[in-house]
Image (cartoon, rainbow, N blue to C red; front, side, top):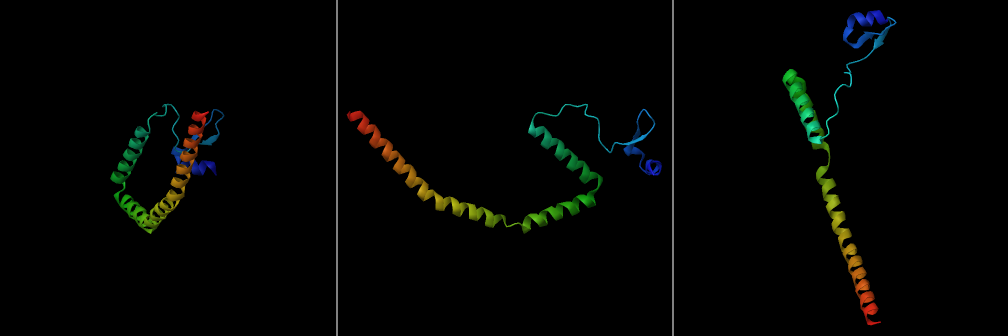
Length: 115
């Protein structure tokens, strides 16, 4: 069975020293050190996307259409609106609490200065 697969997919098999077939996939050996900067990783990812769009423009166009369609289905406006409403509803009690805290701190420093 493995020999049949090896005939059709020779790029994913290699032979170990004992002569047995070994599945390796499309993995490259880790000879390069990973890049430190996230900007380099984003650039690499964008280059791969650009190569994919040049090699297979139909698949790239269908993928872009599908991603745009899914993004439009998400209720992003409602999520952001809900977060803003939550922030405004919590701002009033938070400001009141911090104001009271400052008043207590002020009274404590005044009473400590009088002693």
